[in-house]
Every structure is written in structure tokens, then in C-alpha cells.
Image 1 (tube, helix red, strand yellow):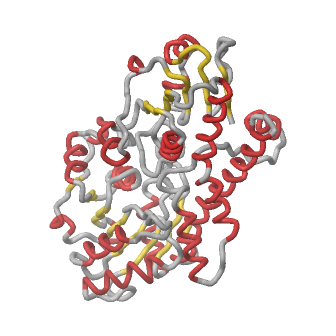
Image 2 (cartoon, rainbow, N blue to C red; image 1 turned 90 degrees about the horizontal axis):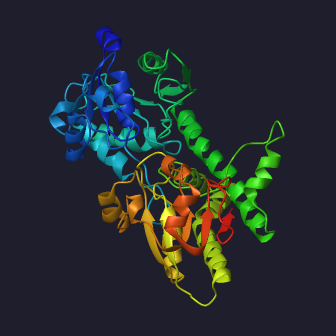
Image 3 (cartoon, rainbow, N blue to C red; image 1 turned 135 degrees about the vertical axis):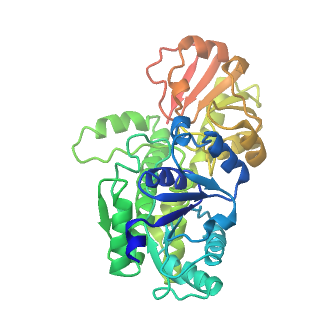
Length: 431
């Protein structure tokens, strides 16, 4: 066990936004196998291409990371780190299917004294009460005796080049103090030992799930203020500019809350609370407000358009930005889709442009024929700026004049173009 302690062989299960940066960080000190069930993803990574844009081609082509979709490569590993997604169902209840499949897969290759660490966001108890029994059943080994469980909540922020995995505090927890210490050593190699050891696995699970729930609730408050401000014919951004001058005012911004974390994780905490016969009022109130923002934005745009030209019901609208946040190609749980669908229900024709999203993914998963060139954009009655990608921040008054018809509406959801001096015949509206 001493040799495993010093130089364990590590398998990272799932090579998405979380798993790939982790595997790349670990490979500088350990023998690392990166496993993913997506054969195309593995082929892309081997060629040096990361579709998430998190890791540069030059890095992928020079490191010794073994990327594979071959289950046989999971043999004889000392540590398994699971980074598979934890989505919700259509009823907004936890979907533990990916975790179950990963646990069953690892269980077939689990050896004595191995450690299985989960990074996926879950509610307290999932690692030990859901994943552990699956690993035991498939492997025939006993958790805490023959193999050991660990948890280290992921804190990857897609597109963030400042809070990278080597610069942030990593939380770890182990089934025993000895396992926690081993995980502290392993993870400490990637961030100069900036490790917090949680009291136990359930505590670490709870810490992770409340991080995103807290952010969701804070954004929901600002979104509710935005809806009130709209009724007062005020901009929430102007209000925030003033309020942010107070030293302890929290600088949250309004908008669409999607993605795989903030828009999902609070439902895991709510599920856990209800299982304990506690109705989570604040958590779900935040979710309801944020889930409603797409419809609110669409209805606001519709009403503005009707005031500009009440004689024509159906308008030609351009949506700028489809990904769930700026600077990344990630379309998972994007709430821009709510804006699009509601505008269509209100009778409008909607085109969508995004310079970063994959057109094939947009078509396959969202049913959207994505525009990717600015040269395609012209003669719209309205532009709705939903995602502040860098190319959109650089748009000029001349660009808007090309894109819009006379008396067009610019709906600036993220306050991107507040300082662009627009012609007086254009109508500008922001939250």
C-alpha cells in the first residue's frame, strides 16, 4: 500500500468540463487514464481538440494522458475519480443514472484497497448510501474494508481562466481519516496543497450543493428586483450601479440561470430536504423565479414590439447568444431556449446566432438551425442580446444599422450595449 500511496495509478471517469482539466492537472505527477464513453470525444482529444475549449491543443499533444473508451483500461487502477454529470429529470428530481452506470462499471474492475472518489454534485448521502452499495454488489468487495470511498466536490467554472483548478481551494473527504489524508496528498499536488479536509463525506456533499443553491437564490433576488423595476419603468442595472457603491452589497447580476450546476443543483438539495419531511421554501422560491425569467423576457420584448408597431403582430427577431453563459460553447440547460420558445408562441419568427456553439449540437439537441456568421444578419425588427460573448461586446452602431430595420428594437438583457450611441429611431431596452 505504501507504493500506491506514493504513486497511485489514477483513472478519471468522464472527460467533460470537470474531468478533463482534472486529468490534465494530475498527469504531471501521476499515471492517469482518462475514460469517457463518448468515442468521438476520445478521438478528438487524441488529435488535440477539446470541444469545451478548456484545454489548449498544444497541451493535449504534449502530455502523457491516456485517453480511452476501452473498459479494459480500467483494470489495475488504484484511484478512480468519477466526474460524470448529475442531471435532473423532467420533474426536476435527481437523475442518478450516470452515477449508477459509472459505479457499476468501476465495480467490475475494482481491486482491494482501491479508492473511489466522486466529484459529481449530489445531495448528502449519495456517495455512501447509493454509490457504495452498487460498488459492493458488482465487485463483491466491502466498502470501508476492502475498498474506500471519497468525495471531492468539483469547482470548475467553465470558461473561467482565473479560478482554474490549480488556483482554487479543493475540498476533500474520505471514508476514513487515512483515506482523507491520501486524497489531500493527491489533490494537493495540483494546487500547492491548498486543500480543505471536510469532517466527513456527507459534509463535503452538503457543502457543494449549497454553494450553487446560494448563488441561485442571490440571482433570483436580483431577477425579482428586475421584474419590479420593469413595472416602475426603471432599469435594474441602474439600480445596481447605485447599490453597489455600498461596501457590503453583494454584486449579483440579473439574467437567465441555466447550465449544468446552478440551474440543477438546488433541486438535489430540495429533494434531500423533502426526504427528511422538510419543505424547502427559499430554495424552490429561487428556482421558480429564475425558471420564469425566460418567459418574462420574451413577454417584455413582445410588449415593446407591439408598442413600436401595433399593426403587425408577427415580428422577425434575432437572438444573439444560445449558450448558457458567455465565452463557452456549452448548451446544457440553456435558458435562452425558454426565450426562443415563448417568442415563437407569441407569434414571432425567431433566428438564433451564436459564434461559439456547435451548430450540429444545437440542431440535434435543441432543434435550432444556428446562424454563425454576422453576414447572415439583416432586416430584423428586433435584436435580443442574451449572452455577452466577446464578439457581441464589440458591435458598433453601424452593425446595428445593418442588422435592424428602421425603428428596430434592441433588447439588451445583459446590458452589453448601454454605452453604444444608437440612432434616435431605434428603441433600446434593458432589464
